[in-house]
Length: 111
Length: 116
Image (cartoon, rainbow over all chains, first blue to last red; front, side, top):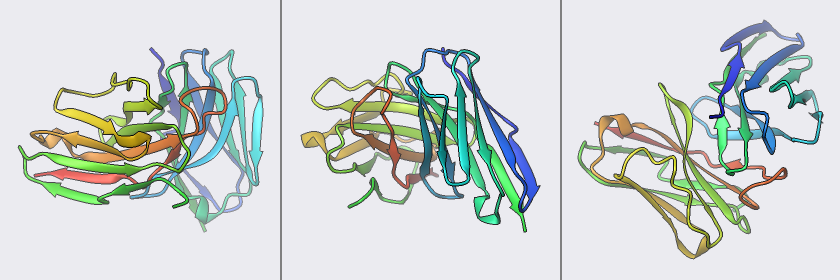
């Protein structure tokens, strides 16, 4: 059974810092991995999708890497801003089509 | 519309009543998913539909939960005889196809269900 773990559960950093969020999964047989952002009381916004054959994806200040063999992904946020404050969720898709989610990392960026 | 929409945004119901939650997927998306987000359980899969295939109901927590998708578009999630543990945010997502490397899922804003 696929299990997804995110570390840390919460993170507080001053504005301008670069930071890394971690995601690990137990079954390496995945089709893709998605990173999402969730603001309080809101739905999920897709940030990046990495296919199983890819090593990383970049969008603006965000960079996500994937090491499928070791069951790990990282989300790197450069030059963090207060507007980046949110909960970040990673999810993996296997051959069933459904996403298995981690518990999320709640990020606070202080001005 | 441009994205996935859900209604109502909030629903308060009494224990034992039935509720219906609605999801309108992105036009042209053949796959539709329901997830539930609760404080103790995080985000968990409930059910998904792909075209005319039989839905994958493996995540439904009990037989009080059911869902249908009419005409390959709008979906309704029904919870019968609601219990307090059903209180959660119910999220709907859609994607171009059900599975594969390119299967990016787009989520709606969710319906917050409170059972009193």
